[in-house]
Image (cartoon, rainbow, N blue to C red):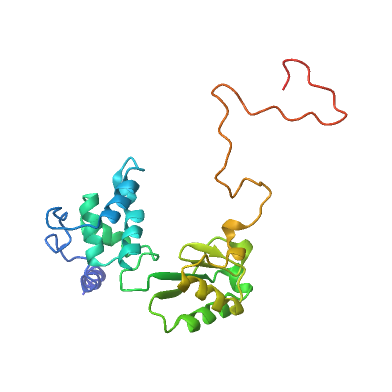
Length: 235
């Protein structure tokens, strides 16, 4: 067999030259008349779709909303999202199987992702992950996994707990973390990244002042002691 023939045979063995099954389930947009969608889920999806010029850009937040309701991106959940978005389940399935924060198999409703990238690893992330896995092993409602990088190196080692960034953490913090999670309380408020003090006292507040009227810039900086007042026409 020639080299080209061998390559073709190898490709065939992997299914690369097989025809697409265009008529398989999931290739058609679900019928709204026969696909019941919970009202709250429909509202979340439509709200996300309204944020984008191309409604398909809302696919990921829509799948997240379905996962929060069903616990995972089940075939039923994907059918419901596809029905509202007017896309095929196959299109949504291609996204759900690519992004690893979307669960395509039954999983717990709570997620604990422990960052194990270099900054966290050097500060004990492996031990932290092992402690979380051991403590949550008997709880089917809590899914635990390592995560390559959560982008919060300044609070290493850290974890994302149902989307809330918490750190720095030690194995000794795990009982408190899981107790807060199971009780529905705020997860270790003193360790939450969103509540950390920063230089800008307004940074973690929604109470921002309104923008200046059109045509007016920000107020002039205060004159420092000992400096001459700026001449008229100068900034």
